[in-house]
Structure formats: C-alpha cells, structure tokens
Length: 270
Image 1 (cartoon, rainbow, N blue to C red):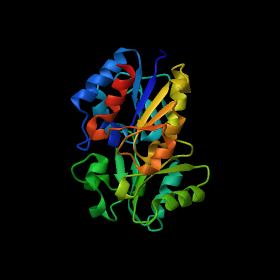
Image 2: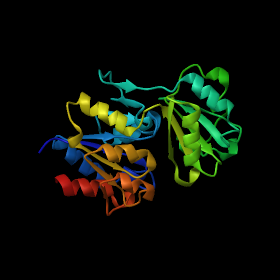
Image 3: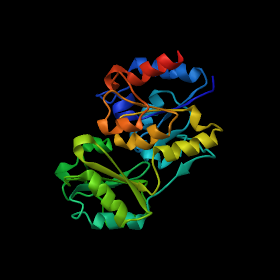
Image 4: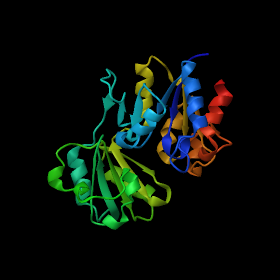
C-alpha cells in the first residue's frame, strides 16, 4: 500500500468536547505512524495553542497552523518551512473599521503571541486565546503593530457572517481570504489571499514527494471545506457542520467524543 498523508483537524475532530485527545486516539495514531504513514495536525489554531497536542502525540514531523498560513516542524530548522503573513497595512485598516464590521474584538495572531482590541473587552472569551484572563498587556495598540500577523481573528455581531466575509474579500481584493468558524460565536478569520488548509497540504505533498491520491483528511467545520474537497478521501465527522457535508466524500458514523478519527483509521489500516 502506498504511504498516506493523514491530515487531521483538532477542534471538533481529533479533540473531544473537553479539548482532550483520548488515550485510544493516541495509541491508534502511533500505530498508524509505525506503519510509515505521516500524520499531520492541520488546524486553524496558532502554534502556541496547538504545540502541546503535538508534543502529547509525540510527533516529529510537520504541522500546519493558522488554517494553512504556517507549515513547519516545531523546534527545528526545516528546508520546507512555509509561512504567509497578512500585510500589516491591511491589518491596520481592518482595525480602523472596527465599527463597520460590528466587531466585538479584532485580534492579530502571531506564532507565539497575540494582540486584541479591548473596545468590548467583556465579550472576549479568554479560551479563544488559550489564556485564563485577558490581560492589559494584550491590548491591540497601533504602536505595538510592528510586524505583519499570520492571521486576523474577529468576532462580529453581524447577522450574517458569511455575507460579511464576502464583503471583506471584496473590499481587500487579492489581499485576504476570509473563513468562518466558531459556530454560534460568529468568528471570522482573515488570512493572506489564497491561504487555506488545502493550499498548505498541496505544498506539503509536493515537498514530501507525494501526490493527492495519498491524502486523507478529517474535519468538522467550514474552514475544512477546501481540505476535504482536495483530499483523495475527505471525512466529515458525525458532529460536523451540515454545510460541510457536500465537500466530504463520506461522513463518519462517530463524533469527536466517540474517537471518530481513530476508529476510522483503525478500520482503514489496522
């Protein structure tokens, strides 16, 4: 059998409702890797919010963060590391239009840090940034923005986040790609134009001398749509957003709380 590249989303997919990876899932992933297949975490999370899962799984290969804006091997210099940044000028302009977007907050996400507007500080869920509380030092101030971010995260009160995403892409043509996630939280994520999980996986396959026929992917939300459509076999979780299903080849019979990813991999390979 040809070796496979297995791309796995975290939240709502590999992680259970308590944001944990079960011992069963850890064992199955290790068994899969021992057969020579490559498992790659492919997440919208920044590196700082995903590296502990990478370590927990004992991974040594590549990892994809920020929905495809960063592909790297944590803690190593890697010839194929690839990072896309969102133009700082676009970021600052998005922040200036905070009221236009009906934003609860706007945040610039970097590999190891973040800055967030404090206009509606009480509406910021600290867990979105993997912190216990939103500290004063995290406030987004123009003079702090010296570097271009990987992505910009925004929570909006807009009644239709999909329409707002299209509007933003029209305002900044050829500069950003806006995806949606967060279920009822109305989250928009603005990445550099053309960046998504499929974009990163296409490059990774090339760098590993593999092709699309060797790609299997698992996801649950609309930031996984391109990835599932691009993969030779794209699996949507049983708990997936129903809007994602047309992009998947198959919907699993198990949810993230039922070790859906591990059970399907066990069925396929073990």
